[in-house]
Length: 80
Length: 80
Image 1 (tube, rainbow over the protein chains, first blue to last red):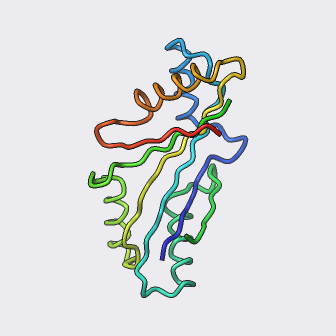
Image 2: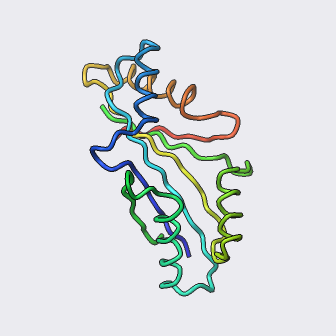
């Protein structure tokens, strides 16, 4: 059983990593880049023996408690 | 003009972050997760005035020189 978790900064929240990247690019003379939006994707394989409901519960907990920061991130779960 | 760069660890190369995550999960009693594959996605917006060829060159250089580590990552560029 496989799930895909995608995590991105919430709209309106500053992404310090991407701000730094854009500053670095400007300083290096690259002025053509307007915006960089970063998304993290985690493909999570679970043992086949796990019931679908339990699997989704485990993946949801992983996304909420470990991978994402609910204060600044939005995230989606998709069964593959 | 918009491009999507996707970066992942090359097959066969250990991903220390994901190894740590899997160890942490096992130690927390979560034994149902077999594997976690991490991919980074960057959506890059360029000024409309940049010619397509130049835009692709800039994005390619950004991926190769800044975002990815060619020793351990594989990456793709896609025009959106």
